[in-house]
Image (cartoon, rainbow, N blue to C red; front, side):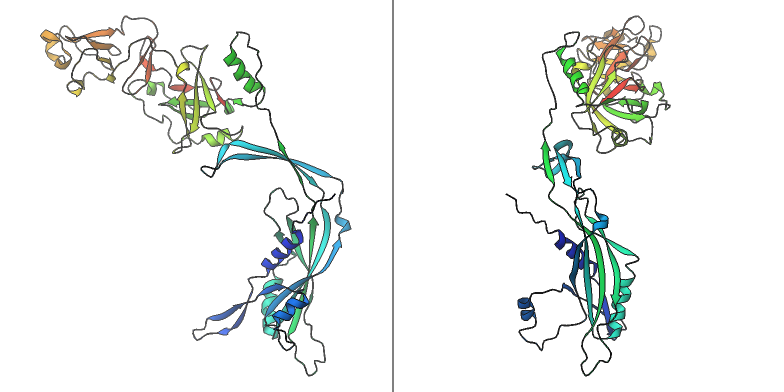
Length: 468
């Protein structure tokens, strides 16, 4: 039992043919200001039925069609054997949609449905169309012909559909011949409307229905198998990579610079001054006006999915561990990725947090800082005080009895209720330390010489990975 199928294929070709000739005009003279009086010439399909033609002519044989006018009709539809190809060929193509959110009426960055389309070989035909141009004088005929004739040199391309998987949508319209006039000599006593006929040929295809299959994809297989260390979490992550559902790359051996929760991609040879990562300066970006944007880097490997794609960074202070965070392109600057770190992968603090990082020579409790209170802690960027220069010590940092605060750059001081004491001695305490600034949320690392940001910094190619 066959199913009914009608796709209006020939009708679409006729509609495109109509549009080709729907905007031509003729000049009816000039008005008082000398401006041309242009009249648009209508076009219609010409092979009207007898009943419809009777209605148009108002049921009278004396009613004449208006002019100028263009009509067209099909004069031939022949099987085009020279264009015949393998009739049993089946073309298969894969189509993947982007997921669509009906709530926001927008397409998301993740993949939606996937389809396999099987297209059967279309049948070639040659469509012949006559275009009749009805005019009342030779001037009108020449105006229209001059506008039309220059378009077909040698042909005009038309598109029947805007469906990109339709391999038959494009064709050409060729002008084959011209019959200048329908009048014969002698004319006789009658003076009929002059009719010029242009014959066009269109090599078209008639297609049978395509078979569309919706694909079901197994995205993840989870088995009761652990890795060599008995770690189920790492085993599942490795499965994502091995099964091809995720892509892990270090694009082009680029470097990345992490600063204040944002990642900037840099050329392999581009150098960042390490002093910019000290306490004295931590503004972003460190490299101005780079030529690399994240969308350009990611597009070579796939699609970045905000909140799902993530970046791993080798911990600079613990080489056997990684710092992991999800990423998304900064909507205000596509040079930057917003890096949301997983707290479980961040280095753990070894010292109690500090309230702020301060220069004790320009700020003090009650002078740019809150009044001294028990438990307050500050990390100092400059040295202050000595036992010999009591008169020049900052008095706001002094304790009871004007006892001076003697501290070095890098020390952490704490107020015990009576005086400021050294809670961390940068001159004598040995070993790696981590501390967080409560004001900014930035974590710092003590490398036995100076405090630097524990996570922020430059990561060379191979020291970071992008997982899409």
